[in-house]
Image (spheres, rainbow, N blue to C red):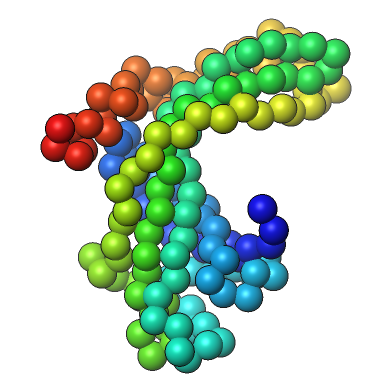
Length: 148
């Protein structure tokens, strides 16, 4: 993957409406710096930055084994081109260009904290899904967003 910079902005997920706040970009210095709308960039020739992030709509517990939890994540990839005008990252989201959404699904592996039981891990995933409106059918919502 390599290095990147963080970009912080609140963007509403077109599928579920949840606020996505953390994005990454490789269009700047890629030194894990933090940027947000209105910040100045060092390269005056830069006309736009591409940022990308994800909105996870649902997690499925695959298995819990020997202090580790295996989780499958489902959601959408959000990618946006943001104008840079006179060295400043545009604040007005109406000027931002969002790319077509892409479904994502990927596995993740995490260590279970020593003070958590397996039941608490399962409950945390259930709570996460409840908070993220797990009844969303991502595939159908994407088709609707695309006008299919």
